[in-house]
Length: 210
Image (tube, rainbow, N blue to C red; front, side, top):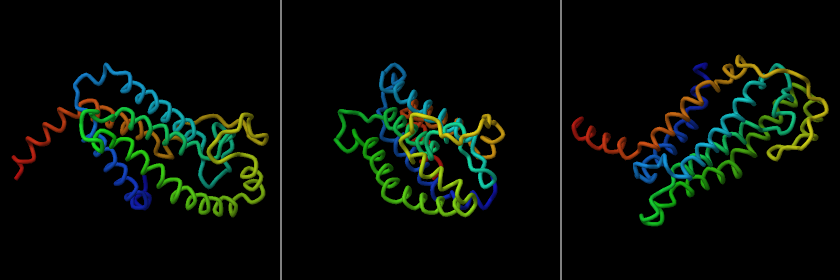
């Protein structure tokens, strides 16, 4: 990944890391989470979301062609849809202790709500205008037709009529840096699963480091 891209994404990555750390801290600390239905429901949502992201990233070729294959033949923003499923899955996995005070017990849903509101009220309108202008400048009438024909977030039932037959590509997924996302998801899942041991370890180490 280029240094300029890392600088551009740094504040977003920081926000994601802070979100995950908060989820880990406030998640229920019971040791048998792996036996609960809600933990595996969250895992299923995250896995489904990452499958959508990988599918999309393997078709996306930025700035060279107008990507209208794979999930882009049904919806304009499949990466965001996959991210939403991942967010919802982590919120389910990180369910709080229902015996705690209300804000601790429901911190996962509050964080999910904040993330969704931020996306709807700020990021989505900003990105739509910026990306729309850039794609229109690059692809002209082809983008305008695609923009009119394919919805932003709620997939159409039939494939876009101008979609080609480009195959999914691992190289394209790597070019979009998606190969690292499963590792980050695995690390977050393990941290939530073993949060009690992890928090106990950190609280022991921090005083020793002083």
